[in-house]
Image (cartoon, rainbow over all chains, first blue to last red; front, side, top):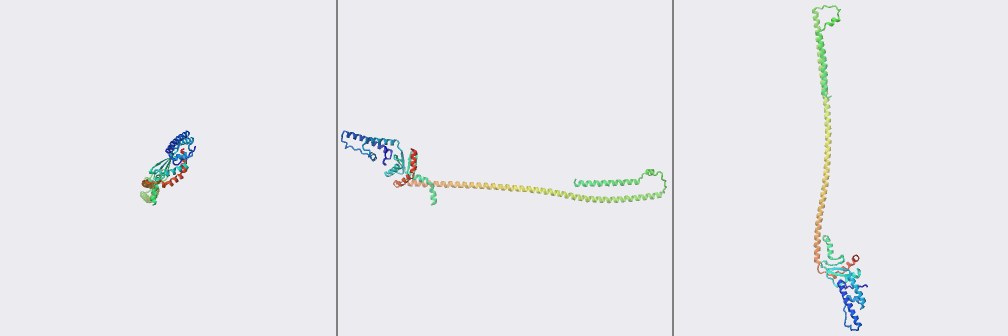
Length: 157
Length: 216
């Protein structure tokens, strides 16, 4: 089963909470099915899903089997998750997070998870780390890389 | 045979001839004053005896004595003349010989002196050439050494200069970068950096893909 992760499902914690939520939802669906089987009044019980869960469950409805399949997929994803760490100079806003996640899932891998960190020493830009690979596009690194050009610039001035 | 040896030989010959002449003169004188009577007696045994008066005999004797004295005087004069001539000739020969020997010796001396002078000149020239060559070598070595030292000194100065410039640049770069980092470390607006972030991602898309693929 192929799933498309929404942009607001970014971190491993998000995935864990989603799995827990879907487990609860699965149990709730079971209860609802039992109640409907015995014609019990189930209109009063509602299950509030989070936004990512809603997006995933929307097409599944209350089909227990599909929900279980989804849970298995999510568990597999969690166990074999590829986490990309993005370090930014400040805590990222929701917009920034979504922008980066969307781009990465669209261009790199659809099932990739993220871990966001911030480090004010970066000044700007970002640092991408995937396992042992690090892509440093921070302003600090650029400044340090180009610091030997400052004397030339000053001389030219 | 040198000049003095020749001169001695000539003198000895002259003395020999003088000795012979003297011996002949003495023999004649002896024969004249003491004649031998046996031979005429033997050779003329049958000649008749002539009786000569004592006056005539004395006259004849006186005359013979005078004649002999004349002959002796003339012989002495001749001998003296010959001796003088011989002495003159010997002197002349001696002078000639001495001048010849002197000239020869002088020539030899001059030639040997000239040879020595030439040898000395040759040696002097060789020594001068050696000295000049040595000086040239010394000068060349000194120039080479000087140029090497100058080059080393220049290189050392240049290296020191570069080192100082590098140190100043490093300090300056560190100062500027520290200043920028300290100054820009606050009030970062990530919203303004969205385009930069996306452009970086787009720019390195293939690199990131490759990295992710390799790591998986």
